Amino acid sequence: MNHSPRIRTVLGCTLLVAALGAGVTACGSSGHPLSAKPYDAASQITFSGPVGAKKADPDKPLEVTAQGDESRITDVTATDAMGRYVAGELAADGKRWHSTAPLAADAHYTVHVSTEDEDGAPGRKVLAFDTGNPSKEKALKVTFGPEGGKYGVGQPITAELNKPVKDPKARAVVERALKVDSQPAVQGAWHWVDSKELHFRPQEYWPAHATITARSNLEGIKVTDRLWGGKSKPLTITTGDRLEAITDAGSHYMTVYRNGEEINSIPITTGKPGFETRNGVKVVLGQEYYVRMRGTSIGIAEGSSDSYNLPVYYATRVTWSGEYVHAAPWSTGSQGYENVSHGCTGMSTGNAEWFFDTFHKGDIVKVVNSYGDDMDPFGNGFGDWNVSWKKWQEGSALSNTDKPDPASQARLSPEV
Image 1 (tube, rainbow, N blue to C red):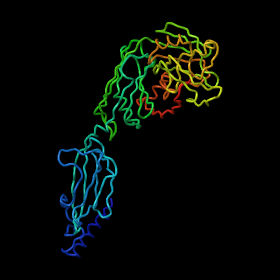
Image 2 (image 1 turned 45 degrees about the vertical axis):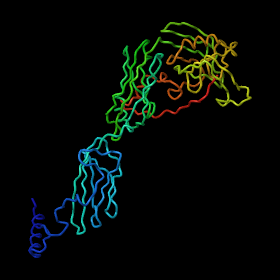
Image 3 (image 1 turned 90 degrees about the vertical axis):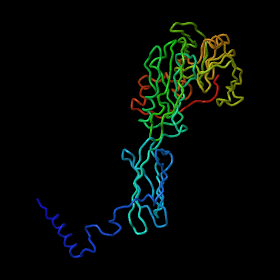
Image 4 (image 1 turned 90 degrees about the horizontal axis):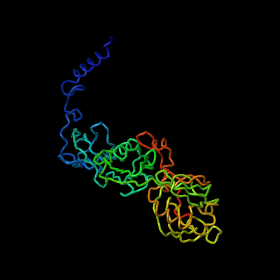
């Protein structure tokens, strides 16, 4: 072992002390300000944080200010109980330090402030405080949909957030707190449509005559450092019979089933070439006894051969962009034989009235054998059932898959 470097250091210091005498010591204490014990700097600074048991607002920045003309701040270090530092800036003249990063809610912070006076003597002050929760206006709230009532077995449960949640871990916190129960019980899952909307559906359609409840347990739960769960109103809906209308654009007939048994077969017409009806499962969104439908609303020039301006009755809406099942007395000669509409499913007035009285929100309308595009999963109604169960589950934050926001391709007009 070689101890010589350490011995030389000690001897060197001893010789230097001997040479300088008692007046100045390089290795010991002296009257020099830099070697003095720091004094309590409480009288030299003001702090914007709370005093006593009061909690700080995490949305407000911290600020430390030097008092007096000769005092200045030399350093400020703020950390939380986990050792995470708060970024900040110290003015060039040492008169003010302020935080430049947000504080965490419901956290404990320690602030170390170093100062010096006009003689260069060091001061020190250690401050500690807790942050509270964000205000109620900044809480994460959930609004469930649809409104309470009776629906068809195709109606998804929706959860609308008042603030976006993008981080996968935060989404998992939210999702675990959203509960959906069904009697009879079914397997189901949440799917993130975008950063502010989730949908819940079973693997198959809901059971007929089920009672479904949705509630949030987010209240008081920490979602992120700056976002806490707020109070939300629960939802209860029920389902009726399982009603399905299978619209076959190839055979030009609609077959209607109640609880798996055929109850009607209706001659129809669907979208002609260039205006083909969308394939896939759609869910009834609402019903209007009378709708004025105009071709100009979907980009058809007035006066062209495809232009129309018609009063339409017994209109059952299945997309937000204007696809309906409705009465089309002007096309009865084509119903059951050819497709002549601009995208809607047309039928006789009597059949449309029957359909209007039989189907309600949440009931299923499925189009097959059309040359049209597939129904959008989201953004143009409820196309949720067109997503495979495997893909649906991948849209859950609990599957560690973060789905991008889907692009809505909806047109905002009726299609007759």
